[in-house]
Length: 354
Image 1 (cartoon, rainbow, N blue to C red):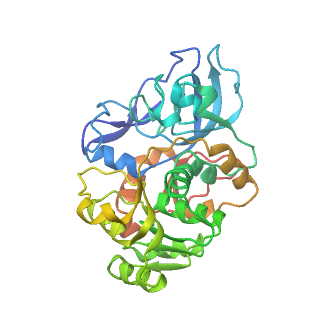
Image 2 (tube, one colour):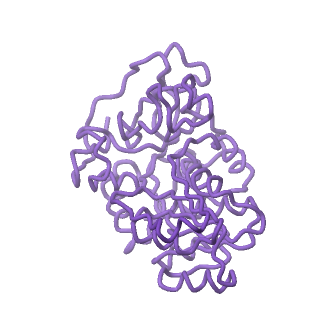
C-alpha cells in the first residue's frame, strides 16, 4: 500500500510500505476513506517530537471501513464504517477508568502516527479498537466527520472544558487555526457573553466569525480590544491555540485575575512563565493532551447539524496527492489552508476544491 512515511526532520514521502496486519487480539485493520493533516504532523517534521522514529507512517485522524478485526474486538466488525480516534485506550488502567485515555498506562494514549504507524495511508492498524473506533452513520460526510478524530475534541476538551467556560464569560481564543476554530465553535455551547478570536491571517479571522466569534482582532490590537470590551479587567477564559512562546505570553497578559488560561498549542520551545507577575492574580493554568471522552457527544451534535464542521475544511485531495497536500497545509499563510482532507470519493462525498 501507499503511505506518508517520516524519514527524520524535514524528510517524508508518499511511498510503498507493507500492508498492516493484526498484531494483537484487540486490533482492527481499517481501510482509510478520509484522513487529514494536523499541525502536530508539521511539528513532527520540524523535529519537535523526537519520539517519532524514522520509518513511521504519519497521521492520527481518519474515517474508514473496518476490514479485519482481532478475536478480542467486540464493538465493531468488518464492513462497519468508523471514525478513527487520535487517542487509543487500553480501557483497564487507572487513567482509562477515569476517562483520561490520553494518559493511558497500558500502551494507549496518542500512539497513531507517533509511536506506531498512523492513518495517512491506504490502510491502518488500530490498536485497542473497541476504544479507538467509533461507529459512524453512513450518511455523515467523511470530510466533516474526520474533524472529530482530533480537532473538535481537542478544542472542546483542552480549550473550552479545561478553561471552564461559563455563561456570560468573555472568551478569547488566540490562534484561529483548526483547533482554535473548534474552540470558538464549541465555546458557544456555554453561552458566553462574547468570544474573541485573535490571529495574524485575515482568512482565519473570517472563518472564526463564521463559526461564532463575536469579535476578531489581529495580534497587535488584541490586548487593547480585550481591555476595551472588559472595562480593563481582562478575559475570563483565554485559550492558547498556537504553541509559541510569544502567543502564550500574550494570553497570560489578557486573562483577568481569577481567570483561566487553557493551553492547547503544541510547544516545541521553552516558554517563560512570568510568575513574578502572575502569582498574585489567582490564575488557573491548564495544559493537556486530548482524551477524546467527548467524541460520542460531538458525533451526536455533528449528526444533528450543531457543529459547523464544514467551515473548517478548506481543501480536499485524493490520497495520491498527499505530498502536495502537505505543501498546501504547511504554506497556509499563502494558500489560506485551514483543514486539508484527503481521501477517495465515497458516494460523491469528497469533491475536490483544489
